[in-house]
Image (cartoon, rainbow, N blue to C red; front, side):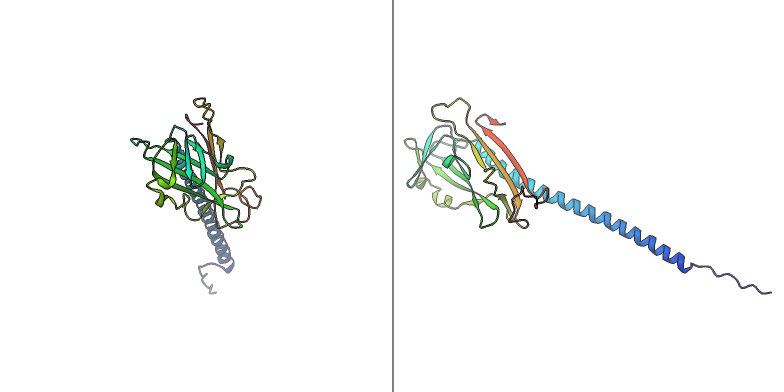
Length: 234
């Protein structure tokens, strides 16, 4: 009796099981890769927002180190602003004014700076700009901006945030600039301070919501704040 030799190979069932196992491994590896890439993207976005916020804060705190220590009055047309190192026009909120004296400069080479936040359209976004006028002369306790050598260049307000980034419009609960200016009668008391609070957000998503809104995901905004005093930071 002739017995047919058994052929080697895989049955259909074995091949289906192998394909299923291989497909499962591929799906598992791809899902791990996607989660890793997504996590890395979120980390990169958060790092970028952190760098933007800290860069803006660093610029303001660095200026604070060079405040001119004598009280002056800044004259801008019909507007007169008493400045004792810094001033909070209107009691504080949207802007802060600095009069600066850099090292190795005289009282005839002062610098006027104004940081200002303004709403942008109907979105819950605000700009953060700086106006800088150099070459200001102190005369009889006054600085007349129109007489500063850098007045023409200083007429333009420049954004200190990169394109695509703005402040959150949370003026109902918090403003960028608050504090207490040292009065001319209590100089040396150490009571003056400036609080700077910046909440940075990108502009592409959730434009109609505040950062505190539940529709805005965690990590979409980045907040940094500090308190500046004549003696430094605290």
